[in-house]
Image (cartoon, rainbow, N blue to C red):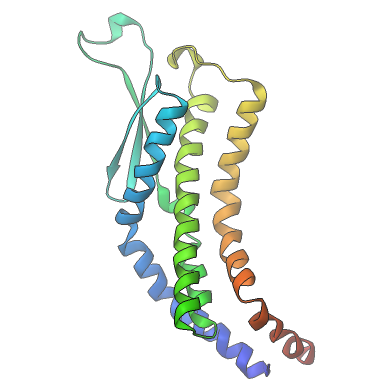
Length: 200
């Protein structure tokens, strides 16, 4: 592939990025609603006595946990709740890059559409992952145990929560776009190698 074609591909990626970021932000409430639809029952099944619900406000959510406090601190007929704010967009910021890479690659309606749908699905799963692990991180790593109905986790379980949160917040959103693109466009990427060698 000529060097000019490589530069043209890079230019197309940068041209598609603003459009993809606009679409990602415009549909943020919808993607958040889908993520909440699956994250809420998942968290409730893991900790039914602790997780009450997930409330959505625009593209942000609050995971509502029922906490234990002294009876004199709670009015009669009321339940003490701890809202955990989560921004699901933190976990899907790589989606626009994935879509831009796909759109800048050779166009084939079936393949391009399939790759875009797979990218959207993967990042929805990452959002669900992020909502769950960030909530668990706040509850079990930052909240006093006496507020959690004395639910105590083993050290290895706490390590998994910390690792899951770090993966969801730092690693998965950043590397997933490249992994998806490389996986589906290996032949196209292989054509870059001669151009890169000539450029060096």
